[in-house]
Length: 156
Image (cartoon, rainbow, N blue to C red; front, side, top):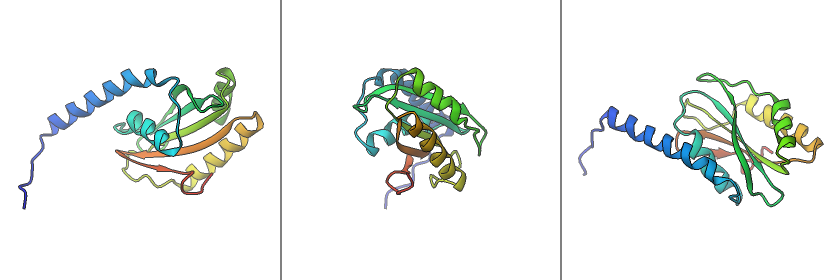
């Protein structure tokens, strides 16, 4: 049986900071990247949101070919909640001429299961965006390195 490795919390914290810095540097360079379904959307969301200690709601704005126009952190919350304004997401979709979006947010609790309010927000967002011709392809919930696709769960 392998010996247990004892990790120094300072080393782990430094590693997470390095990952966050690299993610911050590379997220901007993802513009033009094609979102090839749920797997790519989940990777992008995990890369940006995995290590956050409070809830953050982000949106990937996409072209008609599902190429990334912009990954944008839209709203910041607390350790267990984030107020999201549908109007602002719609407004920005019009501004960047998006044809589709992938919604994403994190659960610092470590549980990626969507709450009833997450599901209600997703339905409300999809309805509002549909009015202006923008499709919601997915809503990804990130919990550390784990992620859940609401599209895969049939919640869209």
